[in-house]
Image 1 (cartoon, rainbow, N blue to C red):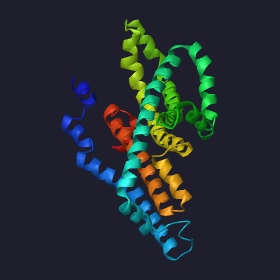
Image 2: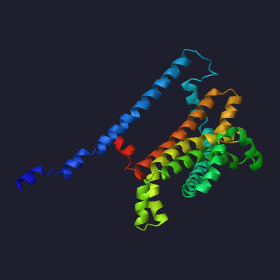
Image 3: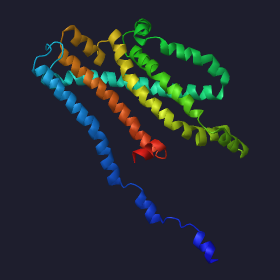
Image 4: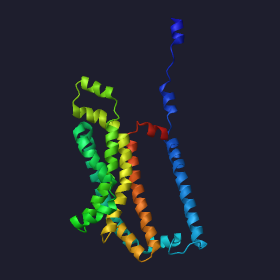
Length: 282
């Protein structure tokens, strides 16, 4: 009896397990350290930008100084805000439609090989076509409103959602699917309890890519025909050789894409806290 007792491994207590987990303060410090690297790199880029323009290595109409770019923000805040709201609405609408339709198409293709063989080559063909080449057709068909811009944003964001959705839904272990079928789970319950949670990591990664592409698609649509939006601001600034305003619009466009990316990443923290990518970040 004593020998068995000696050979029995002792399990760590709950207190030790809790200590092994990183505390909130430690996770917050890791997040700050992770954010420090891009912040330092961005600061170095701004310093290099300032030095290049201050020493007049390039003409101001080619690369404006940081001060001139900041002046474009402060001198025309209402102008930039108005056009930013237009592009934001078009981006959000295009991204939402692409996400909903993309997930639906991915589910249908996973459950139907006939639909996959029929529509997958067509989706790939549509993705290869340059959107700037077909955007004028959308203006002819739908007019100069927001519809052509939203449609271009949908086409840009649709493909990564479909591909990541199909890959994620097929990443489930076939033995696990057989087990759920053996236990009498319905296809709907299997999808909600097994397939969808397993597909979330890859699907969220596709949504991150789609969010940034939706911004690009909305601006591309505005390049073709629009009287509002950041694409319109960029075209007007380019025509007037106002590079400060052009840089300001590009910065806002980039921040919009980064903001959407960050929103999905925050949602990822709550939807898949169990995933290895979240645990490794601590």
